[in-house]
Length: 392
Ligand SMILES: NC(=O)C1=CN([C@@H]2O[C@H](COP(=O)(O)OP(=O)(O)OC[C@H]3O[C@@H](n4cnc5c(N)ncnc54)[C@H](O)[C@@H]3O)[C@@H](O)[C@H]2O)C=CC1
Ligand SMILES: O=P(O)(O)OC[C@H]1O[C@](O)(CO)[C@@H](O)[C@@H]1O
Image (tube, rainbow, N blue to C red):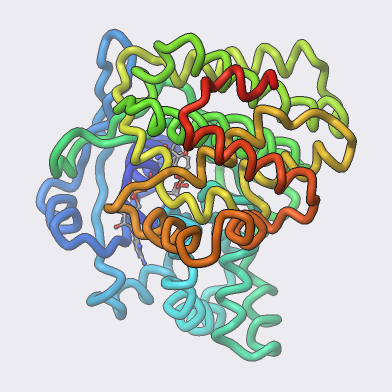
């Protein structure tokens, strides 16, 4: 069985490629990083090191790799033969592979009548549907209908902290022991293949992807943005400060109310989930740079994203958002000259002012929330004490 995976980065290697290999697939990565591609093809393997006390290491083999930029024909050929296609290239990059996919799928459906699932594993709501919409832009409505008679884009939620070693060590992915890959079975087209090892199949993905994005990703991004203000270099060093830990826990408890209110989940279950996440973040075997975790703040502060969406939903239900509006304000202060989106965000604030920037970036419509974010932005800038801002 052949699995074609776009994105040989942290999640590609440490999570998706690892589980596809365990299921019995030959994994072929498609990436744009030629050095990484060469390394895969030289050794046909890589290592996955668990961030546990034993530093358990497993080898993933056989693997191969192609370059999506200068090996188009080979990539198109593999898309036609693949049994499953997956991605983890970043949701903002999905449009970059859509043209190649469209071209290859049109060729594939003329001769290969096996059903195909294409699963985008990105931190976003319905990333596979986003990829489908991008593919749609490259074909006529009739061609898309033909493609969709054989090809499906099931949505998924992926949860595992995956990072790399310092320097360009293409051969080793570092991952926490925990993982959760949840796939919407109702949206799958091919039910004949063996289930993916370690994956969970559900009929309703919404509670899973939202729980992941609005608690794990929200909490992680919040820690990074607050850590930046406290000049802490890593998520772990930041969470050693009890004020930061208390604050991050506060954002999660606010967000959790959205789930208690809207899904079949109890307060106790949410409390347990929150404590597990905080312990994962504090894993003493991880040293996670805040600029990696906080990267791309324009995306993370966006309308349907980890911070703004739960805040909007909670306000709609009249529930508290005191912590979340501070976390959003901290996001607007995240200033990393090496991060393209952070630079754009700071320029936007400079050019249009913080008030307009908040509305523009978050899409939040409620005047009270926007005002609260703006007030908190000023207080954080003046270096007011974090917990006192929340309690004012
Ligand atoms: N690292 C983590 O802990 C987690 C990451 N994710 C999600 O997984 C996705 C990937 O994240 P990471 O693996 O951390 O990022 P990464 O930066 O380590 O890997 C992304 C890979 O995609 C490649 N890429 C970019 N554009 C491409 C293109 N057009 N064609 C082929 N390859 C391309 C890059 O060269 C890179 O190797 C993101 O959407 C992220 O939100 C989800 C859960 C956890
Ligand atoms: O592309 P994004 O959204 O920054 O996703 C990567 C982040 O998501 C996480 O899985 C959880 O917050 C982190 O490990 C990682 O920093």
